[in-house]
Image (cartoon, rainbow, N blue to C red):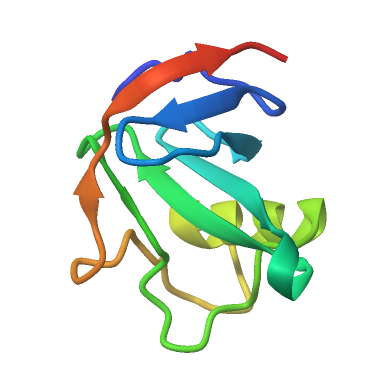
Length: 108
């Protein structure tokens, strides 16, 4: 398993993106990161899989959102298999994944 060097509050600039994402939930394998989408008064999110070295959306058809810290923590629990209500784990979508390439990181 990959040692996670990122923590909640870190700002990550991905190579393909102009705006930084904020780490909202972090586990040993996964990060849930968001960036503001001001036009719609919401956020865009990405899930980083540090073991497979990819990032993308969660593989749920109708996701549960990532607007609040609680929703991000719930998403992390689903990814890690700790969501007892769901009964199964989720993962980074195979359709929407891209390589995990970092341009820079600013620690919280």
